[in-house]
Structures are given as structure tokens and as C-alpha cells.
Length: 107
Image (tube, rainbow, N blue to C red):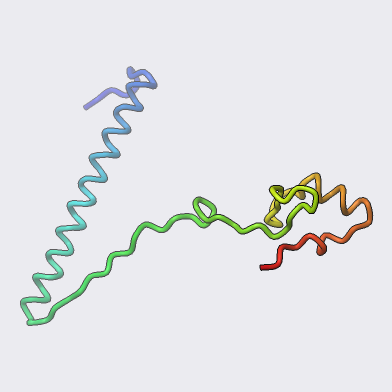
């Protein structure tokens, strides 16, 4: 058994990475074995199964691009999605008495 108390942080990171890789390999192999077992059991009773595996779900925030909702009339490259902090250009226009609805992007 490894004595983790004597390991450096770098050595522990290597051990963790190797353990995670091994765990993922075992889980993949187990997954394949379970699917094979399901198909074998189904075949034993003359039934066919079609297994649809779900792909890993990606967080909505991770990859989704949110379309711009507002556009700066003075610089069309500056846009805002309507989420997060209001950009300075829009704050200034609203402070001048303008309505932010004027800057909505209409498709």
C-alpha cells in the first residue's frame, strides 16, 4: 500500500491522474460488458434490442453562444446579449434619456 503522507503534491497529482484514467477504463469496459449481456439475454428469448446511448450532456453555459439582443448605434461591432452587466455604451445612452428598446436587434 502506498503511503500518501510521504508523497509530494506533484507525485500525488500523478497518482490521482493515473487512478482516474484506470477508473474510466474500467467503467468503459464494464459498460460494454453490460450492453453485451443485455443483448445476449434479449437474444436468448428471441428479442432484439437497439440501445441508444446518450452522449455526454454539455452544460448550457459551456458551449452555447447566446445571440446579441442589443446593438450600439455608434459602433455596430459592440453588442450585448442582455445578460450580465450592462455595457458602458448602453448605460450612457440610457443616462441621456434614451430607451434601451431603441437598440434591440430585430431579425
